[in-house]
Length: 61
Image 1 (spheres, rainbow, N blue to C red):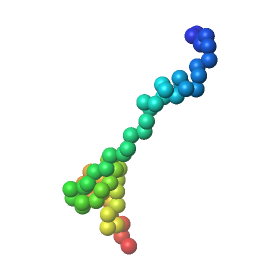
Image 2 (cartoon, rainbow, N blue to C red):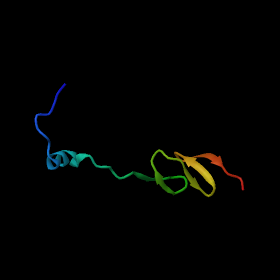
Image 3 (cartoon, one colour):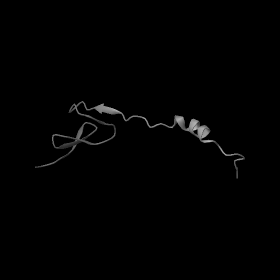
Image 4 (cartoon, rainbow, N blue to C red):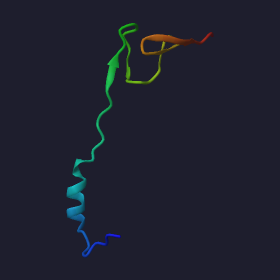
C-alpha cells in the first residue's frame, strides 16, 4: 500500500480542502399555493400537505 514519506502540514491539507463547501439549498415557489419550500420536500399549507404542487394529504381538525 502507498505510504506517505513525510507528514502533510495542516496548511497544505487545508488548502486542498477549500473546495469542499456546502452549497445553499434551492428554494422553489409553488405555482399552486405560492408557498416557498425546499426542492424535493413535502410542505404544509393551510393544514394540507403538498408535494410537487399536488395535494398529498389533508388533516382534519
